[in-house]
Length: 197
Image 1: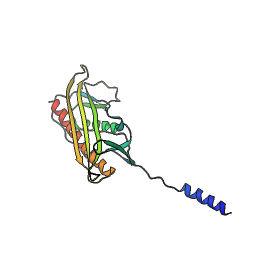
Image 2: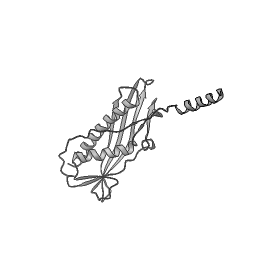
Image 3: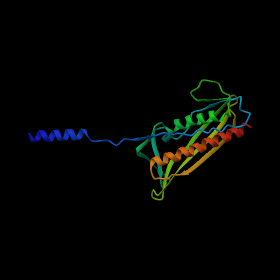
Image 4: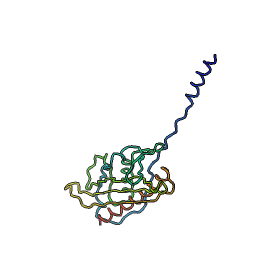
């Protein structure tokens, strides 16, 4: 009888072990209401191609860097959607809101377009420094505006944003990445407005 009680005890306690939940984070931009005055592209359509990026930005795994070069992944935090896809989607939203172009479509669209925007997400990550006493995020986007008919590159730019992180954790890092991305998207719209003047 005591053996039966012990077996039941292990079965019950074994079933009640809790596994820590993984927090999922999203990229949520405040899309700017700023519209631009360039007239050259007002009648042109733009297709935003799928972003190129390193493999770590094509998964939901949330990476960070220590000591400048050692890359790790948070164990209890991840992206709700891969940064590659999320940034691409936010780029389309932001460009539509800017009204620089007559129409902005995503790479999934079958529509023909006058212009194509290629983007390369070179960096989108949180850094920890000074024995984890300091943290910042860095975003680097390389963008090219291309004429659809001739495949000629009309203009290219590299946008880099760095922002300090208040607290040494993933949640605060995501907050700073969102703010930095918002600034990068604003700079993208300003650059395209300048190209279209």
